[in-house]
Amino acid sequence: MSAGFRFRLLSVEGKARRGELSTGRGTVRTPAFMPVGTLGSVKAVTPEEVRSCGADIVLANTYHLYLRPGHDLIRELGGLHRFMHWKRPILTDSGGFQAFSMSGLTRVDDHGVRFQSHVDGSSHVLTPEKSMEIQSALGSDVAMVLDECPELPGEYDRIEQAVARTTAWARRCREAYKGPGVPFAIVQGGPWEDLRERSARELQELDFPGYAVGGVSVGEPAEAIARVAGLTAAMLPRDKPRYLMGVGRPVDLILGVEAGLDLFDCVMPTRNARNGTLFTSLGKINIKRNEFRDDPLPLDPDCPCETCRNYSRAYLRHLILSGEMLSARLNTIHNLTYYLGLMETMRQAIEESRFSDFRRDYLKSPAAGRYGGEDR
Image 1 (tube, rainbow, N blue to C red):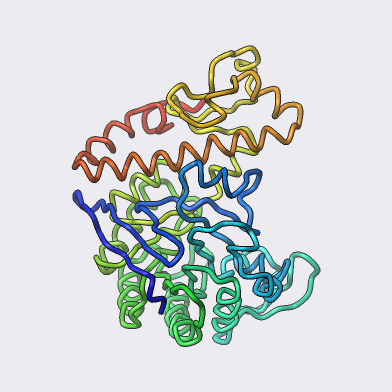
Image 2 (image 1 turned 90 degrees about the vertical axis):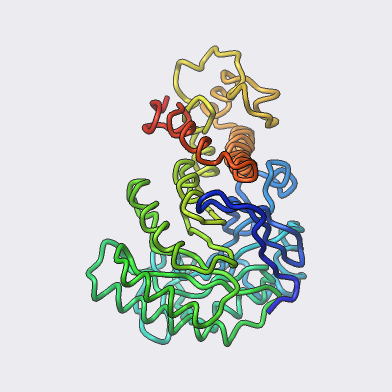
């Protein structure tokens, strides 16, 4: 395992934790949100802009980079950090979720996942060993093990089978990983507490440097996500990082931090930005609405980002309705700044022992949407 990897807690309030995850490429302040750079690019913005928004770490996707341009090419060109010009930590997911969900899956068995490429229809087999080979070639700082992602809702027996296979694959990943970073395991179990407990126990016996909560964020309400995330987090080691995968509504982040989770990722801030949905202290805004046609105000008067400092709501509306590429860039800079600023606010609140007050006030505020104010 990487000698440069370290996780330490700096302060705790209730279950909420503030800490530092250190790798050879830098320190990640936790709780942290990871912008998603699926193909080695956070869409519409440069790595320098991602960093200026406050990001310490980004996420990239094993499945997509394997298919295009190929992990061997990226390795030959110096690894993913050099390839995408991101000098700080990178977490790569295993590729399993994409292979299951979007690639003309033909078969899953104990060996791995057989799927068809969405790029050219070619057939591939993703095994635990192959996933680790790809992520090692990319040079990621955190590599996620291959787990089985059962469709939810599902029958108990089907989820139990996925838990058993996830453990077996995690063991194979642990043995096969040769990369410069560290592997994290993924706890499965659906909504069943006994299966979550079994999965967490079996994976901890393999002694991974970090653990993730998988199998949530499939359309459940925030309360349901928080329940499963919370009960799973309580089963995981206190001295290791905990990652809630694919969860990204602001309220989900706050409830996840309250439950003791440290890392989060989601495409929501960047995808919504390109569609004109923007997160603000005044609530979620659809900038395409006619009410902003002649609005000279900044998008969010409380936001320090480049977009809010320099451009009006009227201009942002004009850009997206005109199909201008600048729209995606300015909107993405704002949404990432909002999300990463929210994480910084939570870190400060935990440090100052006022996280519970922050949580209460946020959930009553317009920014919480249906929790305290209507989306506009």
